[in-house]
Length: 100
Ligand code: FES
Picture 1 (cartoon, rainbow, N blue to C red):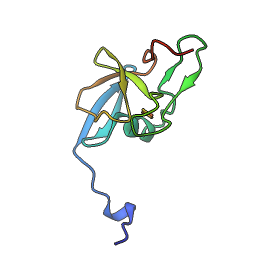
Picture 2: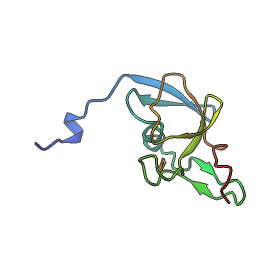
Picture 3: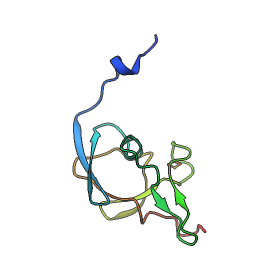
């Protein structure tokens, strides 16, 4: 069966999340990464030592490039974590302790 996304896509209930203090519309059932990409946010964090930008890479929880801070909890993988209404996401401070 072929699915045409424009007409057959069913999205969850609209929710609001807050990304670096800005309100972003998201849909229940999608991941933080999907919501960020859909709103045009590609850079999820910076590396700690060099300050290089990082975003989604593997999209399946393996690479840890997509780390963000969620409601004060750091190192949350955006590609695995579903959005929740009212969630506060900081894209500047998620990082791994051992990276360069
Ligand atoms: S993009 Fe690789 S762990 Fe999230």
